[in-house]
Image (cartoon, rainbow, N blue to C red; front, side, top):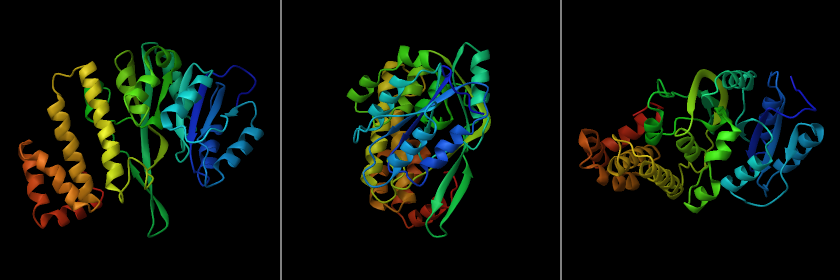
Length: 325
């Protein structure tokens, strides 16, 4: 149910770029939300140069002028600047986000989350479970899978977030006042961070409580060629993961964790990249990262052996079966 002509309680930010095949589905999933509260949609379309993403967004903005606002065209601002500009336009008490290739398959997402935050002032952010979709180029079909989110994610949340970002941005609803008080995107950009969501969670968890709801609300698209999933260009993968590592190192210095230090973060970093490059067939890069695991316990030693024996091909097959290491 769409409630119009009143100050929105919720602002939904949609960031998109070259996503003409999916942006309509994304916007429809938001417009289909069953809520007693009014909401607005702020679209940050990053001047897609090669397709009709912006044209589609303009059509939706024209059809729903009281709900949708499309940011002015400005080429290649980058994700942090794009997100920051959208947030500056948000009127809502609560903020949510959906990427232009994801969609909310649960029409009660906003209602569920707003109800919780309205009744629990000590919480500033609520996130949910999600499902994953990948495109299979062989069959031409979309392949769905579960998120396998960690158990009891609220327990020791900061420490566990430092190890791994288990919060999918599209599942989140957070209080706008908490964001305005504690998040500095200019600082993120000056530090060279590639992403906006992960450092936000690490900062906000210091100032408010997070709530996890185990209901699936969003379908998250793993897009081949994206910064976080590039099987063909290992350099982009390394660049992205190095940025993630920089974020982690910055935050354990700012908010130390007794059980995790820089040495442990580096071990986790090289463990992850070794496995990723084995899975993707970049065996030389896997061997390079495995050399940092020689003194990283039995798991590290085993991974070193795998990388320097014919076992590496068997392990690659195992990882590509979708089984977690």
